[in-house]
Image 1 (cartoon, rainbow, N blue to C red):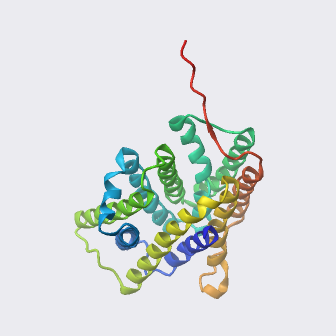
Image 2: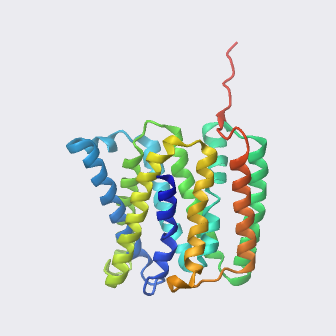
Length: 292
């Protein structure tokens, strides 16, 4: 299931590359993709919980809403980044989520990290710096920043799930899809535009939304049977697969990543691999001080 989720997500970059004039229809694409994610997750909740599925939204609390907004930021940042820079650059930046989440876990949840994780994060920072230098040199600064913003947003969502594990995570994902659709519709309205776009783009956005929605369901089920180390390894499939799909000529894109992107991305991937292979991957909270 986790392999299936990572594989489904890896086709997201390829789907966006098939768009007609993606720079013009970013907000419209996000509208239909968010709507599709919301419909899929709500349908799943209805099948699972019946007519009382709406109670999941009542149990979310503040952490659930914060996580939903973080996921909205991840949705928006990903589309903007991948339409401004190469798919490889965006995906390798997206692979920093485990490390950003680790930092947030330290400050918000009071978690402590292993020495191996600190070493891996330092190596990953070097890899990110290599890719950022490329962005500065080619004028893709906004693409790099939105890619990092997307990774940060998804990290916020992940931390919100750890903050209160009893929060229904599927409800948060559905809410994120709804909020994304509402927000983008509002932005389009202020620009005196229309949510409509070429039929090709609508179909692609719905396909992409289905990949994300179904992937999140699969990942949730499969993650219960794997330790964090193996999950980190499997999550690399989305990054590596996404870069490979847009490169292979058979898919008609053949986007060749630059040498700096390959070097920086390889460093980031190596850092995640190093952290995943280390012993004792489960973080733990800082022990509370005993009262005198």
